[in-house]
Length: 364
Image (cartoon, rainbow, N blue to C red; front, side):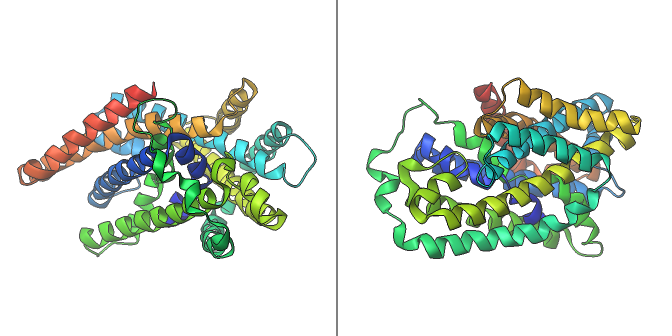
């Protein structure tokens, strides 16, 4: 469940972002983002494990931090969802442009419209095939490495010219890594499968899911940059096709489109339900609140999906991480074991929060 939630659209933006920033910054941001997301997922998993009921992020925020925090959590959640929906629509158009003789802009708009109609028609069950598409996508990554291995050139990584300076796109991969490693939404559902099991086993599954995704991301980045080098494109596949030919482009584009389109519908349906059930919007208004903002952002010129991923990850998920840290501290105080964690995990939480705040400011 967690791998299916995490591994998705972000994978296509990572090679380009790492190449733009340089191998040094791309690798450093990967390590930082991986550590941050491991800690945050384990802590949020602890909240989900210890709190009974069907609460989600906004509900936990209200429970531990008060009503104002609930609205702040809601705002963060909605903006993060809009960023993700915008990215899915943009990528969907780019992938479709490899099949149809139309501009990516026109095709992206079609994805927004058709996806919005399916969200309105209650096609939420399409989200169930995301897991199987993720398995296919993981298989595609491995197959791609096997096919492309003889084309990989170590010189494409340009290890001799590491960029250590704070210039250019040095910060670009950080937010994209956060976005690509995020799977918070599924943790309460995972918790339901661990009733009667220990929290230690629950956390092991969380850690395993994140690490599996991280390994496959690294394989994909190594393959794309190793083959394409400086020809690596923002969607990864177009540049790859110049070396491996059209079949790789067609297979990757078809699978990539299916992944982002079903993710669009699943995420849109989930956001619609948040508006309907948590804030009692009428069905038509809940639907409009889902489909109109991403289309508006798209029409006003928000077309650079790597930048959108970076902003959504750095700011949206960064602010979400701060609330998770505060909620975890409150949970431990209420359980009476706050002091037991204070020497190590309290320091780790403080350092983590300081780093997240610095990254949010840097992204702004």
